[in-house]
Image (cartoon, rainbow, N blue to C red; front, top):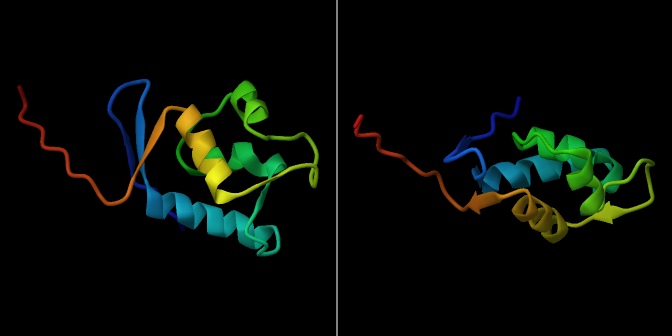
Length: 101
């Protein structure tokens, strides 16, 4: 079971750890045959596994397809998709201190 560590700072900005994104990518790459790419048909599912709720427009604008085998996405292309969804990928765990004020 994959447990992703992410949190929202505001309703527009999401922080996700790079190791979690990489783990999801490796899982989807495994399902696609270990070629280092993820099929565009699975982009929406990929983003949902990262804790996002993508719109159809976001998926289609960033290489998502309605059929398997039409488009494949590399890790760098998926990172650009996450940035366009207002996601900030952080390299390590972040601790937020809440003062209660």
